[in-house]
Length: 308
Image (cartoon, rainbow, N blue to C red):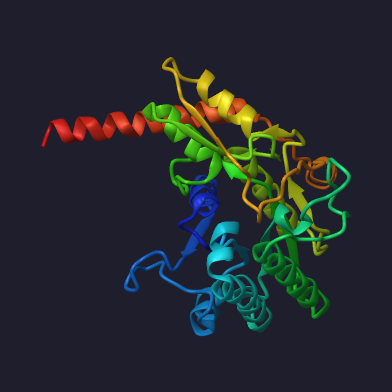
């Protein structure tokens, strides 16, 4: 079996590629972070490249995106083009392919915006507060339209996924964990802001469960989000980082960013009902593991330097 992973060099894509390979499934990478001559190079904004990549696969995990709120605020056109038009390219290529592969589209909890009722269910109104969330809604609508034209496609919404050194180090949990590992200060932008952090291993298990469903059933499931169902404030997350190391860590507080959702945590019951998925690693344990990863990487780097 062959599955195409767009955005294969990112946090989720790289972890998923490894997991699929261990199951004997061929994971074809597709990412514009690589050099153009690389075997897995590809840009979702290039329809011809997308069509060629989709030509002989049974499924597509579409992760490629301008994947951070702050990136969308800095470059809204690129965010919209990549997240919306790029997704349409994937969907159109899948519809045109003789294989008719299924498509699993990676959306985000940012589509919910600032909800009044917590925990948030998938049926909540979609009221994004930033361009990134708006682009994800438009892409979800494109997926829904493609299903009406005969494509087997579904939407999964991720929520603050973390847990690997193969991530943007300035994202909130990696930044806290890297600071703790290095003994540098932690900056908190809005200590009372609440988030629902999900560990990468749990997310990968959820995606694998989704793949099993898509392979066995002709049914396109409704949108499903993978969440812990636990609210963690940024202040609590910083405290967890402090607890995981033996040296004191300075914490600096700053006001929240005006384009961030201030309070979110989700209800994971739909994922459990439809996919038999339950998260296993809470944020404190996940942060402890990530800090250990950073410490190991630092030690390896130091050993390599000493042997130059």
